[in-house]
Image (cartoon, rainbow, N blue to C red; front, side):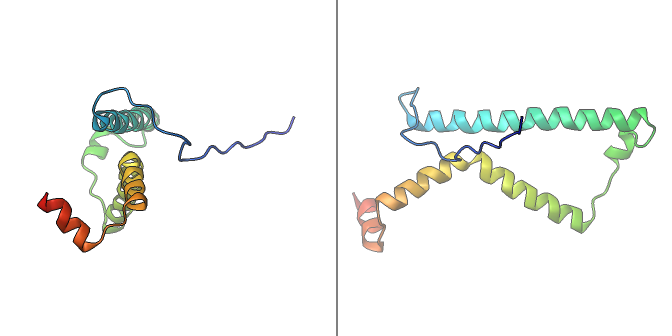
Length: 116
């Protein structure tokens, strides 16, 4: 039997369910749960790698603690961090995009909204 690949859309259709009176609380919980899931997976993978390397005598935990990253490594980590934060804050970005589509903002409309 051939395996088929199913790709789900990144943006769900319809309105996001609201569980708390303040929609910001729902968004915050969504962000926290997304982040918690990522951290849990990364923790398990990191732990696995450290255990395999220590068991094979390749790297000790002291080696890991004393590692000094090169500029290239730091740049690669920065790129990963930007992509990671973009995913974690996806809900906020989607809401901002929706607001921008619904309400064209002119300089005058911004001034008027602040003066009220």
